[in-house]
Image 1 (cartoon, rainbow, N blue to C red):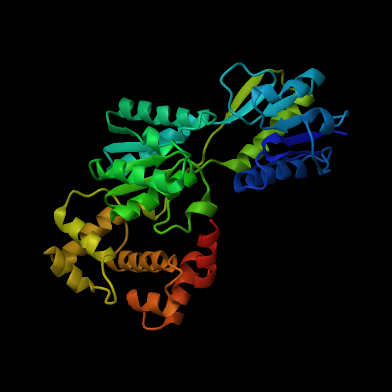
Image 2: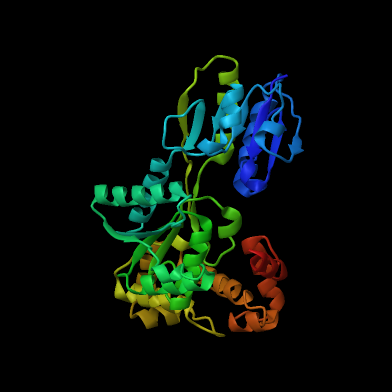
Amino acid sequence: MFYFGVSCPEQGYTNTMNIGIIPRGSDVWGQHLLKGIFLYAQEHEELSLNVLPMLGSLNVVLPRNLDGLVCSLLPEEMGEVERRGIPYLNLRMHQQDCCSAELWTDDPEVVRLAVQHLEERGCIRMASFADRNTEKTRERNLQVMVHNRLEELGLEDLGPFDPPPEVYAGGWTYEKQLSSMETWLAGLPKPLGLICTNGEHARRALEAIRRLGLEVPGDIFLLSLTNSSHLLEYNRPSITTMDLNLTGKGVQAARLIHELVEGKRKAPFREWCRPKGVIPRESTAYAVTYDPQLNKVLKRMKSWEYDMPSIDELARYGGMSKRNLFRKIKDATGRSPSELLYRCRIEKALNLLRNEQMGLSEVADQCGYGLPSQLSREIKQSTGLTPTQYRSYWKVQ
C-alpha cells in the first residue's frame, strides 16, 4: 500500500491517508491543496484514499507502514519522521538545507506580480503591512522582498507598518493596532499602493482606511499577497489578491512525493510552485489619477446620500462635458460612468449593511433604491448572497 501522510501538530491532530494534505485544518488554502492531491490520485490507480484522523504526537500516530509523508512541519518537529527514514515533502518554508524535500510557493514571483499590478495602475510609491510575530518569518521575508523589488524598479518605498511598542504593552488588541495604523496611514503621502502579506491584515487596513475617510481605490490601492477569497471578495470594496495556484500546488506535491518514494527522484531537493497571477477586485479597480477634475468626480460618486447623482450632474460637478467625463473614466477604470456609479452604489449599500442597527428599507433609501426588493435583487446579483446572508457572513468573519 502506498501512503501519503498528512500532519498538522499546530492544530492538535495528525491525519494519515493514502493521499492528501490538510496542512492547516479546514481552512480554504488547505482545501485547495487537498483538491489538487485528489486530482492527481484520480489519475494513478495505485494511490487509494484512506483518511484516518487521529490525535497525538507523531511518534504515536504515524503508521509503521507509512511510505511517504506530505506535511507542514517546523524543523524541530521532523525528528520522528527523520528517525524512521520516511521520505517526506514539506510545504513549510525553511531557511536551512532541506533533509528530504520541500515545495515552496514562489514568493519572489508573487511579489513581482503584485508590485507590477500596482505599478500598472500608476502607483509610484508603496507601503507594506506584515505581522511582527517572530514565528511568521515568511511574512517578514515577503516584506523584505517588497522593499527589494521597489528599490530595483526605482519606485518609492514608504516602508512597513511598524507599530510602536505601546501597541503590544499590556497585551495586543485589535483596537490598539487599528488606532496605530490610522496614525501611520494618515501621515503617508497619497495616493499609494499598500501591500498586505495576508488577508486578515488587508481587512484591518481597510477598516483603518475607512475610519480615516480615505478612498479605496483613489487614496490607497490595496492588495493582499494571499488568495483568501472567502475573506476578501465580500469586503466593500473587495480586495485584490494573488492567485497562489494552490490546487496546482496540491497536484505538484502529490507528484513529487510519488516520484520520491518510487525512486524517480533523489532527496534532498527543493521546488517552487509558481503563482497564477493577480485576482483584481475593486480595491485596485482603476488607475491612479492626478487629474483634479476626475478625482473630484470619483469622490462625488461615493459621497452621496439618498439621491444618486446623474451622469449630467457628475459632468457639471467636474467641470467637463459628458464626452470628456466618459473618456476620462473609461481610460482610468475600464468602465463607463454608469457602470462605475452602479458599483459605487452597491459598495455603499454593502458597507451600510454592516451596521446591524440599520434596516433594509433604510439602507435602500440612503442608496437611492426605490424599493428594498430592488436592493435585495442587485446585492444577490453582485455577491451571490441575500442582504441577510451578507450581513451574517460579515458578522462571523
